[in-house]
Image 1 (tube, rainbow, N blue to C red):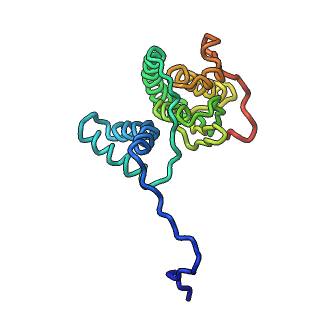
Image 2: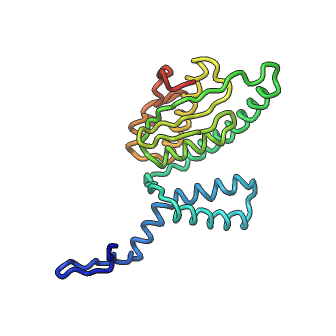
Image 3: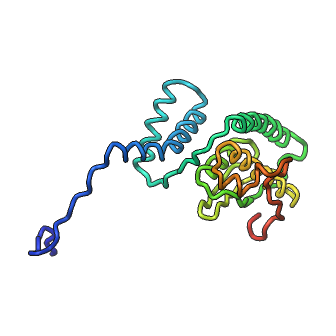
Length: 219
């Protein structure tokens, strides 16, 4: 039996870690703020109500999740454009309405939902913040939901309805990249803005690299 309490002569004593200062605690809270806000928003959306009860319970759940599970810190970009953020919200609201009617028409139509697919989309940004927001926005729009995220390669995998042709898959990828571009315009860093080219180009495909579906990624 090993005596774990034995202290050998000359062995260095374990030094306990220094307690975090107030500045370090404030910085940790600031770094985790986007994740906390996202978790609270998802909690309130799941309950479908805007109330102090859902807000407070969402905060408690968010703190419990961030303290119980290891989650990588989400770094803020340090940039916020109110105009493009308002544009994103307006477009997101329109996508919700169009997506809801589209799914209802497919479900009640004579053909129904013909084919579902898993589609991989390569995002332009490498920001965890933008990847997270893009995944949430796409999942909330009816017709597709994010099944998996590869944060190291910036690839999101979608389960999408009625993707029965290569053209439909390309259209879905363009839609996802368009949402990403809109978020970069509003909240992305200068590096993300340069990478997506959202300020240097205009039009419906600004900053979107159009590429055919890759083999082995769709089903």
